[in-house]
Amino acid sequence: MDIPLIAQAATEIDTGDTAWMLMSTALVLLMTIGLGLFYAGLVRSKNTLNTYMMCVAAIAVATITWALVGYSLAFDGTGDLIGGLGHFALQDVGFEPREGLTIPHLVFFAFQATFCIITIALISGAVVERMRFGPFLVFAALWTVLVYAVLAHWGFGGGWLFEGGTLDFAGGIAVEMGSGFSALAAALVVGARKDYGRLGLLPHNTVYVVLGAGLLWFGWFGFNGGSGFGTGEASVLAFTNTLLCPAATVATWFVLDAIRGRRVTAVGAATAIIVGCVLITPAGGFISPGWALALGALGALPCYAVIVYRPRTGVDETLDVLAAHGVAGFTGILAIGFVAQASWNGVSDGLIYGSAAQLGDQALAALATPVYAFVATYVLLRVIGFVTDLRGIDRDEAVGMDFIHHGEEAYPTGEGAILVSPEDGGEPPTPVAQPARGA
Amino acid sequence: MKLVIGIVRPEKANDVLEALYRAEVRGISMSKVQGHGGELDKVETYRGSTVKVEVSDKVRFEIAVTDPFVEPTIAALREGARTGEVGDGKIFVVPLERAVRIRTGETDETAVTPVGA
Image 1 (cartoon, each protein chain N blue to C red):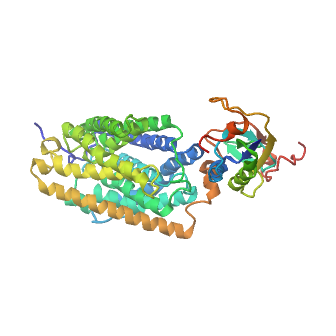
Image 2: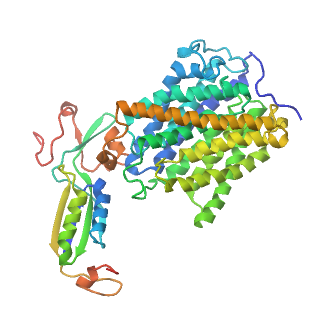
Image 3: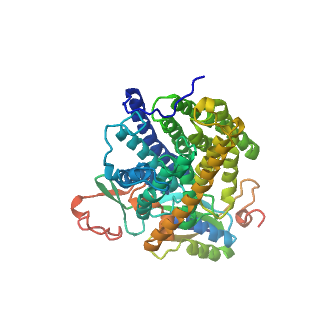
């Protein structure tokens, strides 16, 4: 069979590639909206809007930091640990393609920006229902530069893992392990919710959860299918594997749920969709469709185990970002080392097809990434926590983040709501027992 | 035999449940209600509209108890619900004429004493 080419050395713009990459960029942006819905459904109703707003904030904050410095640090030059500032504030990012690609540099930038956005949005899952909104914005701005840009450089941008031969198709390093292990650090620094371990803290709307997971899967076709930066064979393979692998994960999850609780759960299925998509993220363009199915089934096991075990610990890593992204990303990165097939990817074989060295390269990434993500995030949040409080008082947490931070409710009844006219909008609220003047 | 009615802040409802549990008060009903008792209005903004929410969400506990349990129940409600701010709620104690346990037909004090207590 023909050997697919991952990236052809071409400087011509290909209109087909560009069209697909424009579409993929929009698909990946939709994932962050889907994630907001998924997360909002998993929290209590009084924290719905705040949880969703963390994802909206990720879009705003990460896009700005990425355009200013993040993109440059990740994708300018081939420094071992970090890129340069040659693309500071989008300098030299225009219609000409980036070296080796067939799409305008601007499209490549925008596509990569959506990855940065969803990664910081993912971490919010570890701190929802208690972290203050302001400090989260500061954290998001700094994290995207100090952690995401560094890991993206290592994995895709010409850093030491990339140059050393580690394969990561769509972000097992920067996005999945980066978010998962940072989430663990964030949960440890911010601390558990007040009621954690005392009360059952249940998802308030499971329809949001399954709908959000569905949107994530839909968007993931752009995430993985776009990571070949065109419409070549690698993209096609990754696209189809994004259908196969999560399907196997969901079916496996059904079995695990049935064995453990005698029933197949919807929240479990939604979680499995995400776990399956994450498993195939690093491996999408490197393994055969058959192995994608196998990876979806086998990779479900460690993630399920962590999801079952985590609530028994004191660590309130609230929405299990570590299990669904960190552990699944780790598994996917290692899977490449075992089952990558040069006859499918044109790049490298894994251990069972004769190349033990590839497994070594993958293991290096699977060790270095979690360490950097965890340590850097831990230190960063400690520093922010030294300057300002990361969380509010207990009463704020009891009332709910929606009213405290946003002055809105997700489900207002409207009963007893009296319109405040603009003229007296600045007055302090009057107790009802002493009616306002003129009332 | 009395009916103790406690109207408390929703965010303190779990603390009240815990306090009642510790006071060994077992048989309760709770419901979501809306009302106001002179607390400051909640101000919310939706796009250009700023509104004062004058009727706030509360949780209403109804607890039928024998006379020796009246004071512990009141103490538990106060302990769980109090924040010290206006709007902590009220406790009403009203006499109870009859009580019947539907399953067995037991009446009055036997009926309001939880099974196994």
